[in-house]
View (cartoon, rainbow, N blue to C red):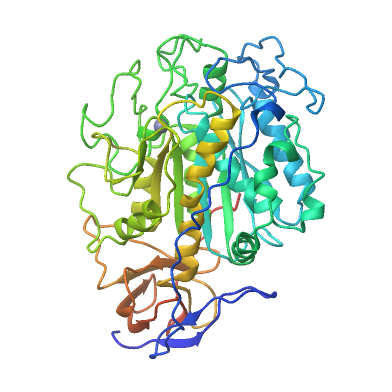
Length: 513
Ligand SMILES: [Zn+2]
């Protein structure tokens, strides 16, 4: 039923609260006030003084107490950071105990801003933790979702810091400065290490407030805790991979494991032995079948529930931002708004302390089965992969400098979503119930048969658009006639509520983590 649609309301999406000033625009010719996209301030905050820091370095294998590891995991002697007068002893940085303690402490300190969720368990029994962040966050939260993850590859531990940095900026700057200062995390790093994070910066405070008010940010610092454990303990298997017993000999030993960032189902194994490997002992083993691994499945469940509008997967090894699709001979949507937003992100990244500028690329080498391509194909997520360091940091000062360099990536992504141009909304049926519907934009066609649907629990959709202008929405829900609506998108956020002219078939929604 072309042309028939009920656009009930063009709604401001901003949540209640002072400072929520989302520009609203939308269909029927309403145009939002212009929003200027601003570059990051050029000020570079100097790294924290290395003298005030407990010592574990990222490169050296450090033992873990391994309590979360389940029965199959050997437990090494409990390591501790060398004590300093200001730093109490704690579990080694990046260990499962450290991760759990950090996240638990932050959640305990900011209970109304965070949800701490176990997304799943690894082959070796370690929990895969997610911290969801947003003002007065709740399960079934209606706001748009941003996803940040690290350590798909357990050897790339600096990627964990990159996600933690986002967590700390969002939480430590969420309250007045007086309240921030007493925070001391279980690894002993407290105000002295994070002091640069706490310097007066009213502009950053304003941005943090807006992100907390208007977004839900899901942070998964360690997707592959089994790999991190193997890295820290000098285990003979590759810390790049997870803890699957691929040769089935009853032990996790040399050659075992799956490369999680070759295991996602979109075009899994598409390039044969070029983009990943079918050989279990390979560093790039893609797993026995698409999405076979518990870690991959945990991330996929999160995606199915939340439909992230955008995501960044942090890695290390070089310095680059990758925009989907990564796979050779897989066609991007035309125009490819992900590439355009990627150019905007790269333009704001600071000079890298390891001496190589950030560049935007489609791929580093031929690859298939990555998380960013799956999120993009499955939900239309603007999903990036950021390679944020060429090598491990030699000390705490360099670690902080690298993290600081990478920080604008997620900041600018959040701002670009909120500043627009973006087109968001909810699809409801004739009874006002949210429905799963495919939402196509005729001017932004996909080329690989992707069908991007609304979020089940609330009918939500989110699309970045390349420029203000007229866009033709084509909406199709099971059991209801298809509808089409031309929308005038302004330079800001356009938010629609679309009511279908019939009662649509209702699907059972996936569980919310
Ligand atoms: Zn990696």
